[in-house]
Length: 71
Image (cartoon, rainbow, N blue to C red):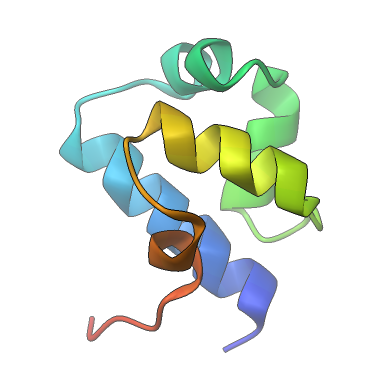
């Protein structure tokens, strides 16, 4: 699986697990909702700084967003 797709799925799963909408997570991470949507769909290539902001908003480490998971 492409790393962008993996990160996107991990972000989406963690967001759902916490009961957050894309808009809520985007607000917490200080990124635009359409940008977050692109990350979740694997269409955006976020910088380390953006991944850090998203991870912090989800109370995770960046490594958690890039980790392979059994699905």
